[in-house]
Length: 150
Image (cartoon, rainbow, N blue to C red; front, top):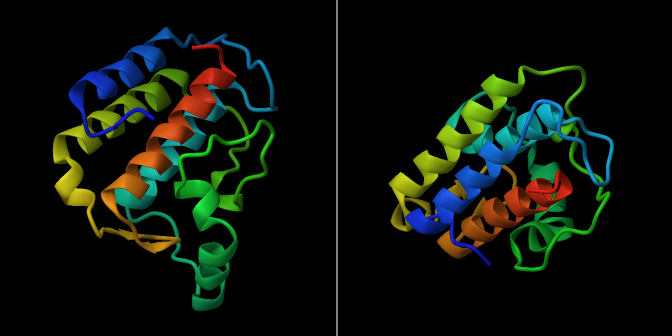
């Protein structure tokens, strides 16, 4: 698994993002490339921007019990996996804006570094180790970049 906290791996993710074009087509799934970029940005918005509601206590417990291990483990995501409602992107998005935002988030995460994320609270899963944060970020990016053949 790549490490989002290492510059070399971060640069590889940025290079893959830069290979995407506004007319890139998915190899599977229903999202357009602009929707996929906006979808990937949601993960980072939940870390850096206060724009998504926190799940209530019951929902957070359910997420920890049912989804956390799938999200933070090293096992890759299967194709056509269902996603949480806040990750579903409807309508067209600005491709260049979403790509630029994603690249900025990837770089910001790398610059903040592993220590910043050790024990950091996740909106949905509670405190995570830096390894769990890395797994979540890296495999999500890899999954969707692979979806679009980059």
